[in-house]
Length: 195
Image (tube, rainbow, N blue to C red; front, side):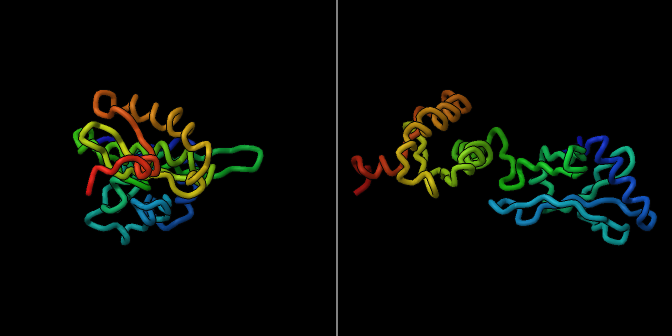
């Protein structure tokens, strides 16, 4: 299995320097706190030999090993650890695009795949405006019904956002599966399909 986590050369060197000051046999542990939630955070800590669990996955890098616990592993898919130096000094950056929601497989039900794209691609764009979208349902006709929350609710720009951005993005990614994206509030004003 290839490493799900990328640790850049500069980050490996950074860790190697830190590990040189630790007891021999110490490696690093990469983990996710609150995996699968909006508050998920990726972290790195020292992992002395006695802290390695039988269920851990060892990812071997040139100069060190990174241990990942069983729970964090699926959420660290495509994660990147880098050590960046800029005007502000040097800092470790952790990117874990799947920490908030684990990657879904291509053969997962459509609703799960759409939900995943909304959580990982659409919502991060809306977060800057204090809003978010959640998937309510996908109708038999292939219409994704979404609800806007937070700052998007009742915002006059919501139609533009929906049509220009979200619908375009989702229809492109789920071509042939989704036919349209509708706002649930618009849906509520229309005719109800249930009695």
